[in-house]
Length: 534
Image (cartoon, rainbow, N blue to C red):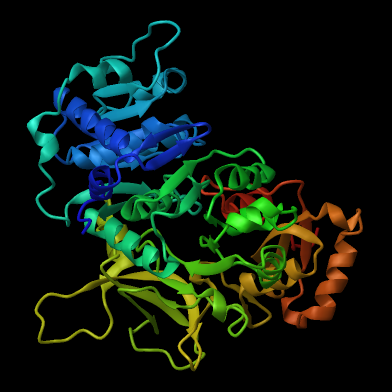
């Protein structure tokens, strides 16, 4: 049984050593080769005096060195910190300083771009360059090491490599949230958190060594990292990909004969408008969605275009990885549902006082179980706000169990199926009504007039808040997607209090590093007095 983040690789290096583990374009590392690289990297960390629980950050695109750093750090009893490669110097600096990283793995080109920033990271002692720089350079007093030189120093792994962490409750990783409502927070995950998540997900997805997963999401995103941990748990193959265009994803599915594809709603909305060749249809066993609500119109599109592919709709949060899923054969019977709790998890819907909500009564989703993270790194206040005692405490137990209070409004129907309403802090209060942005977005998405959109509230002198829509037009509407057309559609299909008061069109919606629409950026771009009389 896999106990630690790297254990699956070790196990399959013994049982199926020549099975490909990681694919990158036309290259591959077998499980044997991957394990050899992990042991060399762990030994290299030991050779430069890395200590247990040191934070090892990696700032690279998806490549072999990225995977080796993540799982090799685990083997060395260190804590890996994946940094999204699309982040800029300011955001990278925040993460490095916040988690007190002592080692950074990056390319020579990226290190040069970060040169001034890295010199200000007082805890950072070493930078490992994945490639040789064209010209020599220094970064203050930070030691620079070349990846190839460092990994080739050791002819054989040192003793520490063969010693697992003391217990699976040890820290394994720090994943930084997208920070759409402020600076990113570092969610601390244990080996147990990560492994239990992989076991639960692979259970209901029926993953096996025959699967080939396509990793298109950032590995700094828990949902993206999951493609690796799930694949390595069962001995499957995972293909790494940083795509430029949605069409490239479909090409990769065909090239690698992908059986499992995970994405977020923004990508699914773009893929829904493309043609899927027969080669993709024949290999793709399942697709999964998390990171936001999948509109019913998009689900229907994939049911039509991929009739033999199972669709799993899921809900999760970084602080607890994954909470619910809806099996493919229940989508039509429970439209709009995010399903029920995944294996080994309990999900509750509660009022502010912790009491259980009635059927169809909106409440906060609370997640309890082994997937609950260890808290936010070095932030006791924010940890106390989100990680609180589980409802229904047994007074005979002197120690309180900690659960994640998600901040998401959901409801449960009479059969126990859950339905997402909105983030508590995103609910729009207009004309005395509380309006869920997701409900308005769902209806507008089904119109076919937009590719993607965001709905939120801004101050209104008469209504409390006015409903604002910012949308990206669907080119298939041939320019007939103006505000009047969309407004008329909303008036015909939404109650009056849900009809938007302002519509804004953009050629492309801003997104945070995890691919979600950056609502905070959109709000800031619009005048706060939008509805004030001029």
